[in-house]
Image 1 (tube, rainbow, N blue to C red):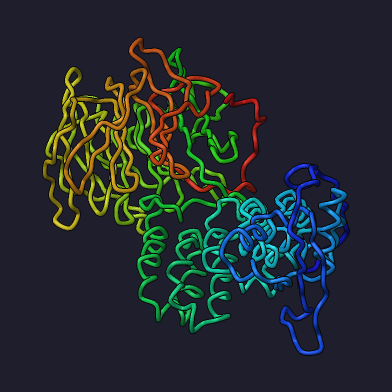
Image 2: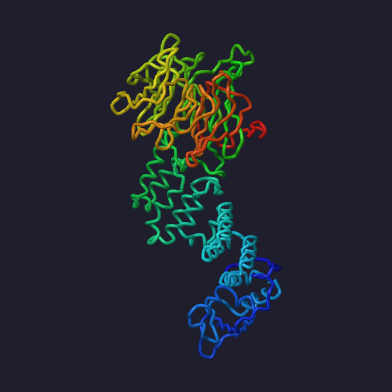
Length: 583
């Protein structure tokens, strides 16, 4: 039996209106306490003459159809006791009923049986207010049994918001698999670390191991394994005996391994932090220049989920008292590896390479580039950072350097087939792609260059629909998205099919804009329009809805900036006044 507290008196219109004068067939309902009629226990008789109960769909079906009840003088209604029936009868005559913790479940079941919908709603409302960690799972089962969708949604929301407290309930282990799946999928699941979710899944499986082991791949799909601490993942997940004997989960393990190795190369539902994990997936707007050609030293993090702007450490060498001593970061390149942001090159910082450690909110200088450059790109592949092409002050270059984070050193890789600058570049499934760019100061190319690190060779793929430079690209799911330049459009390239398609049109050009994936959407930041005016709006492309919307407006327009995605802990962030970003 469910447990509740309190009581409520229902005072509502009688089902079907107030008219009572119709002739109804006399009816005797009989109910035993066990639900069965036994010798010596004839049950309690209730006469239902001219009541609203006699006109419900259940009773009408007995007498309007050719059922045996049509010819019986006494009908046994199983599952409804006399006290509950009297509560319903009182309601039909007085429009009032007292719902208490003792009778709410029985009244709801009977009201649902006789289709007293207002009474059902009243019981559901009572149960919603009575929710607590001990009874919520039972109420959820009750709502599911009687197809009370509204109550079910409210209980699921309660479980999601009180997840940790409910884990201690024995009833939690009895949750149906589809309900557990739905709860674990929620971004709002109230946990402070993903390890709690993994341990919940394993406890649920072990509770009925013989019948639930086959469900492990299905449920584990909603555990965000990439967000687990790498040590915990190796020691507690990969070493778990049930995990080891279930080969169907191996692709999920491989995804987590790859994410731990190379960070943002892997993007999926499982790489997005939940709302309450003291971390958030944010996209960074790094440096750049404003409408009056002033250089930006600030690094801004935008958190779409929390609708806020977050401040982090300024770019390196930009906080001297004399402005002339500060470095101007523009036309540099940036990328994320293992949740650290790498920046390199730039017109005034040609050989410099720095990385931002999000845990300590500081920039750290690392080994210089062998060949200084700007208008180039950086890409991560296989746990290494690639610096590609660019301009060295005299000419476009085809040089490619790779950085080994473990040894803090740079080495050369095979050069590009075409010397370009201001191009787009990204990695996708173990290959690098260099798209478009300018072979000189006036022209642009439509060529797509592809690098395979296993052979250390480049080859050409299907060309872009248009020639373009001052563009950027990002790998997202099974496509590469390209935006910027004079295109006024967002294009997508399918490496699997080696083909291009138009995704959506833009209202303006966005030369030298940024693009980054965040929370399973794409965000296009800043850039310059056809009048060479800097743009302050941030656009959001939702691939599920196939819709482009304006996300927010930055305090100032910016172009030639960097844009990457990281997971940021709120313990190292100072939140800016919400009004700083207008939405």
